[in-house]
Length: 349
Image (cartoon, rainbow, N blue to C red; front, side, top):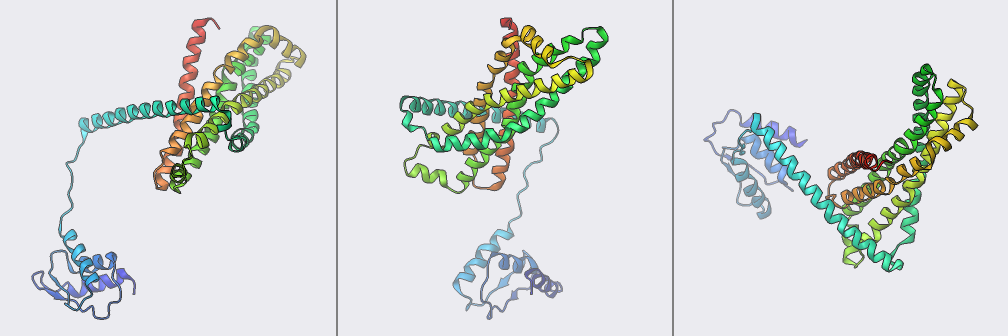
């Protein structure tokens, strides 16, 4: 008989009795009893009813019932309901406190990372080549096709917009500058960084979070292994190496997409497209875009690793940290890109 069915039968049998009447329960044939069984008995008979158990009951079972019964007699405490303007201000306050705590933890994590990188530079033997190469393969090489395809279509859309607007003004050739500056300066680096954040920041968080849940990181610390040297530094270096390469490939994909649309919609030959790209756009726009990439890589890697090391012992925490690492990385990428745009504008670049 299922536990719920037995509890329901017991409740029906005791329904006609007064609450003041004590009930004797025969548990002579009872083999085992856990908290669920004790709770079912007390709930079926009523929380306010006196229950008499035989003195021959095993001490462990009697202790369990004595432990459960007083807990059920207490009415659950309901806190004061907060609503309206007060609730709004409380949420804002909690969000501000959490934001300040996140900034503090970011700074502390970055300080530990700088110290670990400094030790690695002074003593290169500390660098673990195997995890570095494995992370390069997993985090960077797998994302190259996606980056190329996305920037290809973005370049095609830019050229298509240029053909629609500029051709009516008789300056269709300026679509080359539109595609070149847009891809090399903004879209190539930002799209590559966002894709890298979606793939690598989440992967870093999931990997380190799983290790933390399985107590592998605690075991490494017990054995005297530096967690930053073994887990964080290889991932940061892999991001610093692979994101510039991904950005370069993404730039090429965007330029090719713009070139094909310019050839199909405006009759601009590929030779003229690339010659005008070299003469009018130049290498300056490429280097302006590439100057942002190392910071993007550092933000993505540090965010993913920090969130992974903060995972608790439950799966819900892992999922929340994976989502948070991606969202925070993308937010930081867009914020730093806007700051770079202002700085480069002030510098005349």
